[in-house]
Length: 275
Image 1 (tube, rainbow, N blue to C red):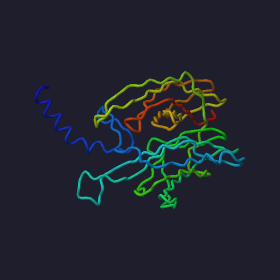
Image 2 (spheres, rainbow, N blue to C red):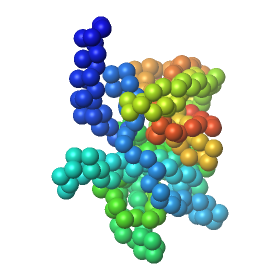
Image 3 (tube, helix red, strand yellow):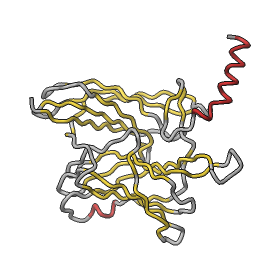
């Protein structure tokens, strides 16, 4: 300890930025690292208007969209501190407003200039901790996608999800019991205060079949209903019969240090096995 510890800490701190380049909130050496980023000041246009029409077939519309900028080193600048917008993370909720199951989706993010002209369209990819498991008619679920190399001069963004016949992982939606949430204030690696959430409960096999390959996703929302954090737990080897339960406990990290939660949701899925 003592003096030696002080020197060691200084050395460790001097090399931390190399470790701490992350795209999603991550815990590194016991410290919470939040991506360099923040509000982009972009207006988001969710696709809620579509929901008012009578819909046939699978139809996805965006209930909410939270855009978080991901910033990295600007390769065209000699200044090592120069930051460039390298990606946009979009997370929120989508609803199937149609009358048929959605098996997969293609996220398309459109970027507009101040005059409303489309600058570019980009296809999003699922974030590392996220998969889409299909969505039954009138159900709501969470999404978490990333778009690389967005234009830096965009004023407005539109997030659209096109239903696809493939691309998702087909799982059955199950039920949740005894869900609870607890919060804890922590200090991030950059010295900011942030709230980390722990969501616990029981996944219930509400079907008549045996279920395995279970997944739980928990997400927290702010007062506006925007998703501000998402966590996941997988039970790869548990096989549960009808009515059986599996306890879960998930840590949900905030997408930004100042994100505050007002409510939370839990979604659970499993794959059906005929024994």
